[in-house]
Structure formats: structure tokens, C-alpha cells
Image 1: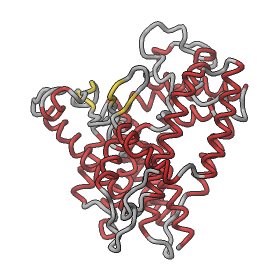
Image 2 (image 1 turned 135 degrees about the horizontal axis):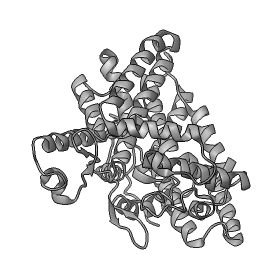
Image 3 (image 1 turned 45 degrees about the vertical axis):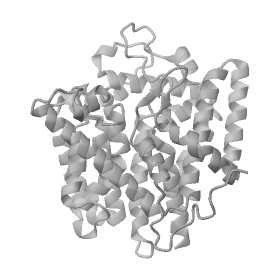
Length: 428
């Protein structure tokens, strides 16, 4: 049987145990959305860590009981819908194998590696600060006239500069897309906002590093950054006493977000597009050019997921089945312009995808986890726990609203961290 050396995965007496191989595995998964290849399936560079570590973890620790039961139910549901034509075997296998492996992989790191919870989370914060600082340098270089999309700041063409924003580009650093960059740094943005306001109670960032992180993520010009700031204000109010701080934080947050929105046409058009389209809520083919393109894509996938859910409410139509539902119910099938069929595989948001592919079963698991797993700031609980809980909750909620890939950029890592924080809080 394949085993680690006898001294592996044991916590050092000083509590600083964090093997280099785990750091590398986390770095290339949490802070990288780039592909190694895309055919016959999407293979991210982070998957290289799976190939090395997953077999060893799996042999040693096996499959946790409750995770195995959930996976079994999803497997049976998907096979049934493959049989009746609501899903395809190829699509199911690609998604299910990746989903199963990713959640198990990060379960092993969070629960079995022996690395302390706080060290894992601070590694995420340090990596986020590096990415944001790099993004800030990319924007400064662009403003000073350095060619965007080439040169050392863009790894000589390996990284992409996206058009848009106040200065002509939107940065994404190593995440592949500006939205993903803002999305997965949103938890660090929560901590940065806290440490900027409450420096005497800081968790990780100095005021300067907090400003660097927030400025770096701002230049993504993604509306998810504004959502992260809004959620941060709400969670800080809840944790510090809603009635005590809400009167201070919420008005400033509203004014601040309003001003941030006006700093870029990119922000303003996206937010206006989403709000207008969801208020209008068309139920049949409509003029997509009346709204921002990203708003059309998000709403269309919500409509598809809703229609599929109405017909298959308990377990959806199975993991990997949303493209089939999209072909049936999409409101933009008549549009020949490229782009309005984007995100067909991931439904453009985790909520949409869970509703479409797993029904009440999958949605119920996540809603239960979010509501029951939240750890508030209390005097009798280690102060680190509520920071970590709130930061991971920001990431989870933003993914629920804006990104539907089940395991992109190490998303299961934040789910398991959030769950483990709850377990640790019960022990206190």
C-alpha cells in the first residue's frame, strides 16, 4: 500500500506545519484559472497537483461517508436522466469525475493534511495580496505606456489584457477572466475592508496592503467586486452588532458603491443591465441588444434553469445536463451573433446550475450549509474563526450568483474551510 513517510502530516509542536507540496498544490489551484489544454476536456494547470497527490490521499483516507452518500444519489439521478434523454453520458462523466475528485482533494487538504485552519486561510490571503499587487502593476504599466498583453507584466503574452474599464483594459492576472479574478479574491477583499477600518483589530493586512488589494481587484472592473464590498459591509454590521454599526457602515457602503459605480461606464452598464432585465423578466424571445450582454447571458441561464427545475424539481436532470436544458428552453436561440450562448456548460451561476442539474436536493445542501455553518463574532469563540467564516461566505455567495463551474479555482476549498470553521467553533 502506498503510504506517506512516518513523519508526514503531523502537526509540528509550534503549529507551523505547512509542507511545500501542499503550498504548491494550493497556489496553482486557488490562484490560477489558465488551461493546460482544452480538448477533449478542459485541463487546468492546477489539475497537475491532483495527479500527484490525489492517489496518495485516496489510498490513505478513502471517501468520507456522507460525501459518498451524496455522490451516490447524484450518480443515480444522473444515470436515470441519461437513460430518458435529459443528459448525455459524456457530459456527465466529464463533470462528475472532476467534481468528485476536486471536492475529495480539498477535503483531504483541509481535514487530513495536518495544516492548521488559520495557516491555510492566511496562505489564501497572502496569495490574494500577491495577485492584486501584480494586477495593480499591470494597470500602472498600461497607464505609463507599456504594451498590454505582452512584455514581462503579461508573461510575454501568456496572460490576457481584456478591453474595457476607465483606462482601456481590465486585469485578470492569472485567473483567465476579470470576473473570476474579482470573484475568488472577494474573501480577501472582506478581510481588507475590515482591516482598513479596524486596524487595531486587524487580522492580516496593514492599511497599505489592504489598499493595494482593494485597488488591484478594483481594476478588474467586475461588478462582483462591488457585490463583495456590499456583502462585506453587511457581514461586518452583523458581526460587530447590526444596530450599532449598520447606521454607520450601510450608508457609507451605499454612497461608496454608488460612487465606485460611476467611476467606470463598465460598472454602470453592467449593473443597470442586470437590474433592468430582471425587473422586466421576459418570458419569451426579446431584443437582447436593449441590455448589457453579460446581463442577457445571466438572465437567460436563470430562465433555462427555472424552466428545467419546474419540470424536474427534486433532483434536477443530473450533473452535466444544463447544456441539454439550454437547447430546450433558451430565449436567445434565435440570436446569430456570437456570445449569447456563452457559459452553456456552467449556467453562468452556481445557483442556476444547482437548480437545473440537482434540483431541491443540491440547492438544499448548499442553503443548509450556508445558513447553519455561519459563525458570528462572539467573545467566547476564537476571533480568527468569524473572520474566516465571513470571508468564505462572501466567496460562496458570489459564486452562487455569478459563476457556475463546480470546482473552478479551488472553489471546494472555500466550502470545506467554511464547514470546518463551524466544526471548530462548536469545540470552543
